[in-house]
Amino acid sequence: MITPRLSRRQFLGVTAFSAAAAAGLTSVTAPGATAAPSADQAEFVPAVVVGTGYGAAVAALRLAEAGVPTLMLEMGQLWNQPAEDGNVFCTMLNPDRRSTWFKTRTEAPLGTFLWLDVINRDIESYPGVLDRVHFAEMSVYVGRGVGGGSLVNGGMAVTPTRSYFAEVLPQVDAAEMYRTYFPLANRMLGVNSIAPDFFESTEYYQYARVSRKAAAAAGFGTASVPNVYDFEYMRAEAAGTARKSALGGEVIYGNNAGKRSLDKTYLAAAIGTGRVTVQTLHRVAAINRQSDGTYLLSVHQIDTTGAVVARKQLSCRYLFLGAGSLGSTELLLRARDTGALPDLSDSIGTEWGPNGNVMTGRANHIWDPTGANQSAIPALAIDNWADPDHPVFAEIAPVPAGIETWASLYLAITRNPERGTFYYDAAGDRLGLRWRRDQNTPAVTATKALFDRINKANSTIYRYDLFGSTAAFADDFCYHPLGGCPLGRPTDGYGRVTGYRNLYVTDGALIPGSIGVNPFVTITALAERNLARIVAEDVRA
Image (tube, rainbow, N blue to C red):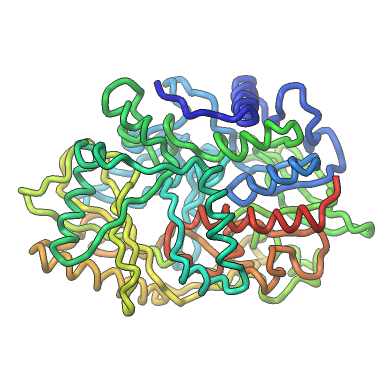
């Protein structure tokens, strides 16, 4: 079995995660370390990071390196302990309670196959790893657990085009980002690329090669896409010398091996400093500011039934919100609209977008099989972003059904200028989203323009049986929620929340609605850039 090389800090962190999971603990600290106390042990910690996703993980590591004891609060579980079947995560084809966050039926993006309801399953309610958050006319997939979205995404580590990055975030020095922070993020995340000889020869990427041929027939090029999945491990899977994870159809409900999720990289390194504690199944319900300028957090600890088993209060000097576009925005909107932090900007909640996400499928000819065995980790995309009218970056996604489907599936990322607005629903004490289904029209139009040409060139048609109806395009959900606290509006140019000293946003809420590719590398690099300035100017150990 191939094991990625770990730094000493990462090794200590991975060891700590394993020990905590084996003992059934909800608090993780490096062995023998004097890290930040847990919410059970203290009323005050110097720094609190809400969430454990990409921006949160960067914040925790860089604060710890600066000598600041830091407590991370995560509402999901630590996914590190095998269940009775010997696996941490369940598979896509046989989902169980581990798959889904407190629902009694799974909610996979493909709702049907041949219009048959054979994909989703009834399950026991449990704090599973993937959540689908429903709003009136849009739903959003998010990861739940230590590592956030890194546990459930396809791992596609794409750096955006420099021109579009500069357009979306004009206040950020693009030269510095591409010279320093994108390379740093890619190195820390363990990004690697598939070897061409393996990609061209393995049966597990036949589906991608079929889509490449179809795109070429229409005059479109493709781009090999880097990933945080260890492609050398995948080669061993194919050779039969390592347990199958990506090649066993694992991805949206977690990968049992091969994937360099945040608990193997940034979070492991943060724990390994000896200054970071991660507390799981802890949801921050509200934030307030005290007269001395510190922040008071109301925290609910839940059990695996979802019941609140403890209500705690915790104060801190530095508060970093890294709960994602939805979570961080909800906390700030609740604080503003309830009067807890009344001076927060009116622009909180604005500039939300789904990164132009649209999913579609094509039916291939019988002489173009996509393969019964497919890698669940994408490695190729149709790159038509340079199109002046309908730019699209379309991931070639797998359909790892274990049978031949003759289906090509795609997640299109488009340049949709439409934006939604989050609001605080006081009656339900929850986040609401003002987003109309017709705001997806530019994204669907761009996706259709691309795939109409591919279908015409190949004499193929769309698949109408995949999304629970007869629709060819699924635009009622997204994987890439962005915005809600756009950089430079309710914050300064580094994520400092305007009007409140030592309060920061450090996640995808800072990116206004679109970045043109899978966003996690951009979120990570932006957090690195922001934390470098914040640690230098604001933080004292």
